[in-house]
Amino acid sequence: MPRSIFPMAIADVSAFAKSVRGEIDKLDHKPSHVEVLNLITRAAGFRNYQHFRAAAQTADVIENWNVAVEPEPIPDEARVLRTLRVFDREGRLVRWPTKRSQQELCLWFLWSKLPRGRTFTEREIGEFLNTLHLFGDAALLRRDLFDLGLVTRKRDGSEYRRIERKPPPELKLLLQRIGGLKQKAA
Image 1 (cartoon, rainbow, N blue to C red):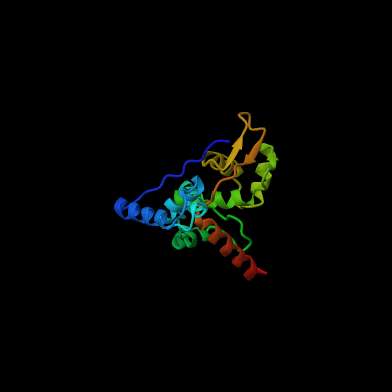
Image 2 (cartoon, helix red, strand yellow):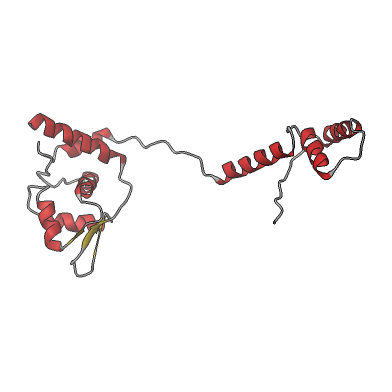
Protein backbone atom coordinates (compact mmCIF):
# COMPACT_ATOMS: atom_id res chain seq x y z
CA MET A 1 0.00 0.00 0.00
CA PRO A 2 1.46 3.38 -0.96
CA ARG A 3 2.28 5.77 1.82
CA SER A 4 0.43 9.08 1.93
CA ILE A 5 2.53 12.14 2.55
CA PHE A 6 0.95 14.98 4.54
CA PRO A 7 3.14 18.09 4.77
CA MET A 8 3.06 20.13 7.96
CA ALA A 9 4.05 23.77 8.27
CA ILE A 10 5.37 24.88 11.66
CA ALA A 11 5.32 28.61 12.32
CA ASP A 12 7.48 28.57 15.48
CA VAL A 13 9.88 25.62 15.63
CA SER A 14 11.10 26.53 19.13
CA ALA A 15 7.62 26.49 20.65
CA PHE A 16 6.89 23.30 18.72
CA ALA A 17 10.01 21.56 20.10
CA LYS A 18 9.16 22.66 23.67
CA SER A 19 5.67 21.30 23.28
CA VAL A 20 6.93 17.95 21.97
CA ARG A 21 9.48 17.70 24.80
CA GLY A 22 6.76 18.47 27.37
CA GLU A 23 4.52 15.74 25.90
CA ILE A 24 7.39 13.19 25.97
CA ASP A 25 8.28 14.10 29.58
CA LYS A 26 4.71 13.18 30.64
CA LEU A 27 5.24 9.61 29.42
CA ASP A 28 6.74 6.92 31.67
CA HIS A 29 7.80 4.74 28.72
CA LYS A 30 9.45 5.00 25.32
CA PRO A 31 6.67 6.15 22.86
CA SER A 32 5.67 3.97 19.92
CA HIS A 33 5.54 5.24 16.35
CA VAL A 34 1.82 6.06 16.60
CA GLU A 35 2.33 7.82 19.94
CA VAL A 36 5.11 9.95 18.43
CA LEU A 37 2.83 10.89 15.53
CA ASN A 38 0.13 11.89 18.01
CA LEU A 39 2.65 13.87 20.13
CA ILE A 40 3.91 15.79 17.11
CA THR A 41 0.47 16.58 15.74
CA ARG A 42 -0.81 17.66 19.20
CA ALA A 43 2.19 19.99 19.46
CA ALA A 44 1.12 21.46 16.11
CA GLY A 45 -2.39 22.15 17.48
CA PHE A 46 -4.34 19.08 16.38
CA ARG A 47 -6.18 16.60 18.63
CA ASN A 48 -4.23 13.63 17.25
CA TYR A 49 -2.69 12.31 14.02
CA GLN A 50 -6.09 11.31 12.56
CA HIS A 51 -7.36 14.86 13.08
CA PHE A 52 -4.26 16.22 11.32
CA ARG A 53 -4.73 13.79 8.38
CA ALA A 54 -8.38 14.69 7.99
CA ALA A 55 -7.57 18.41 8.05
CA ALA A 56 -4.77 17.95 5.50
CA GLN A 57 -6.99 15.92 3.16
CA THR A 58 -9.82 18.44 3.46
CA ALA A 59 -7.47 21.32 2.72
CA ASP A 60 -6.13 19.43 -0.31
CA VAL A 61 -9.63 18.74 -1.62
CA ILE A 62 -10.69 22.36 -1.17
CA GLU A 63 -7.52 23.58 -2.88
CA ASN A 64 -8.16 21.30 -5.85
CA TRP A 65 -11.75 22.41 -6.16
CA ASN A 66 -12.28 25.56 -8.07
CA VAL A 67 -14.88 26.94 -5.71
CA ALA A 68 -14.62 30.51 -6.92
CA VAL A 69 -18.24 31.01 -7.85
CA GLU A 70 -18.81 33.84 -10.23
CA PRO A 71 -22.00 35.78 -9.68
CA GLU A 72 -24.76 35.31 -12.21
CA PRO A 73 -24.41 38.06 -14.84
CA ILE A 74 -27.10 40.70 -14.74
CA PRO A 75 -29.18 40.90 -17.92
CA ASP A 76 -29.21 44.13 -19.89
CA GLU A 77 -32.88 45.05 -19.49
CA ALA A 78 -32.68 47.93 -21.97
CA ARG A 79 -31.43 45.54 -24.68
CA VAL A 80 -34.31 43.18 -23.91
CA LEU A 81 -36.88 45.99 -24.09
CA ARG A 82 -35.50 47.21 -27.43
CA THR A 83 -35.52 43.65 -28.79
CA LEU A 84 -39.04 43.04 -27.50
CA ARG A 85 -40.34 45.63 -30.00
CA VAL A 86 -39.77 43.24 -32.93
CA PHE A 87 -42.14 40.60 -31.47
CA ASP A 88 -45.92 40.52 -31.75
CA ARG A 89 -48.32 39.54 -28.95
CA GLU A 90 -48.09 35.87 -30.02
CA GLY A 91 -44.32 35.85 -29.50
CA ARG A 92 -43.41 35.80 -33.21
CA LEU A 93 -40.78 37.98 -34.88
CA VAL A 94 -42.56 40.66 -36.92
CA ARG A 95 -39.41 42.12 -38.49
CA TRP A 96 -35.68 41.52 -38.41
CA PRO A 97 -33.90 44.12 -36.22
CA THR A 98 -31.15 46.25 -37.76
CA LYS A 99 -28.82 46.22 -34.73
CA ARG A 100 -26.60 43.16 -34.43
CA SER A 101 -27.00 42.90 -30.62
CA GLN A 102 -30.77 42.67 -31.06
CA GLN A 103 -30.39 40.19 -33.93
CA GLU A 104 -28.24 37.94 -31.73
CA LEU A 105 -30.81 38.00 -28.95
CA CYS A 106 -33.52 37.09 -31.50
CA LEU A 107 -31.34 34.21 -32.71
CA TRP A 108 -30.97 32.99 -29.12
CA PHE A 109 -34.76 33.15 -28.84
CA LEU A 110 -35.10 30.98 -31.96
CA TRP A 111 -32.41 28.63 -30.62
CA SER A 112 -34.41 28.22 -27.39
CA LYS A 113 -37.43 27.07 -29.40
CA LEU A 114 -35.49 24.39 -31.32
CA PRO A 115 -35.99 20.99 -29.66
CA ARG A 116 -32.86 19.45 -28.13
CA GLY A 117 -31.42 16.45 -29.94
CA ARG A 118 -33.72 16.70 -32.94
CA THR A 119 -32.27 16.64 -36.43
CA PHE A 120 -33.95 18.78 -39.08
CA THR A 121 -33.67 18.75 -42.84
CA GLU A 122 -33.26 22.13 -44.50
CA ARG A 123 -36.95 22.17 -45.39
CA GLU A 124 -38.05 21.12 -41.88
CA ILE A 125 -35.97 23.77 -40.12
CA GLY A 126 -37.25 26.37 -42.59
CA GLU A 127 -40.85 25.39 -41.86
CA PHE A 128 -40.16 25.38 -38.13
CA LEU A 129 -38.61 28.86 -38.26
CA ASN A 130 -41.56 30.11 -40.35
CA THR A 131 -43.83 29.38 -37.37
CA LEU A 132 -41.71 31.76 -35.27
CA HIS A 133 -41.51 34.78 -37.59
CA LEU A 134 -43.73 36.74 -39.98
CA PHE A 135 -41.27 38.37 -42.41
CA GLY A 136 -40.78 35.28 -44.58
CA ASP A 137 -37.01 34.83 -44.63
CA ALA A 138 -36.24 31.48 -43.00
CA ALA A 139 -33.00 31.23 -45.02
CA LEU A 140 -31.63 34.38 -43.32
CA LEU A 141 -32.48 32.97 -39.90
CA ARG A 142 -31.05 29.56 -40.74
CA ARG A 143 -27.76 31.07 -41.95
CA ASP A 144 -27.46 33.40 -38.96
CA LEU A 145 -28.17 30.59 -36.50
CA PHE A 146 -25.34 28.65 -38.12
CA ASP A 147 -22.98 31.65 -38.27
CA LEU A 148 -23.54 32.42 -34.57
CA GLY A 149 -22.74 28.77 -33.74
CA LEU A 150 -26.20 27.94 -32.40
CA VAL A 151 -26.88 25.14 -34.91
CA THR A 152 -24.67 22.77 -36.81
CA ARG A 153 -25.33 21.59 -40.32
CA LYS A 154 -23.93 19.15 -42.81
CA ARG A 155 -22.08 20.68 -45.71
CA ASP A 156 -24.88 19.82 -48.13
CA GLY A 157 -27.51 21.32 -45.78
CA SER A 158 -29.27 18.00 -45.31
CA GLU A 159 -29.06 18.02 -41.49
CA TYR A 160 -29.45 20.81 -38.96
CA ARG A 161 -29.14 20.30 -35.22
CA ARG A 162 -29.18 22.64 -32.21
CA ILE A 163 -25.84 23.05 -30.44
CA GLU A 164 -26.09 23.15 -26.66
CA ARG A 165 -24.53 26.33 -25.33
CA LYS A 166 -24.98 28.59 -22.34
CA PRO A 167 -27.32 31.37 -23.41
CA PRO A 168 -26.82 35.02 -22.49
CA PRO A 169 -28.60 36.25 -19.34
CA GLU A 170 -30.92 38.38 -21.47
CA LEU A 171 -32.57 35.32 -23.04
CA LYS A 172 -34.33 34.31 -19.83
CA LEU A 173 -35.67 37.84 -19.36
CA LEU A 174 -36.77 38.02 -23.02
CA LEU A 175 -38.63 34.71 -22.74
CA GLN A 176 -40.38 35.94 -19.58
CA ARG A 177 -41.42 39.19 -21.26
CA ILE A 178 -42.69 37.37 -24.36
CA GLY A 179 -44.64 35.03 -22.08
CA GLY A 180 -46.18 38.13 -20.50
CA LEU A 181 -47.20 39.41 -23.95
CA LYS A 182 -48.91 36.09 -24.73
CA GLN A 183 -50.84 36.20 -21.44
CA LYS A 184 -52.05 39.74 -22.16
CA ALA A 185 -53.16 38.66 -25.64
CA ALA A 186 -55.22 35.77 -24.24
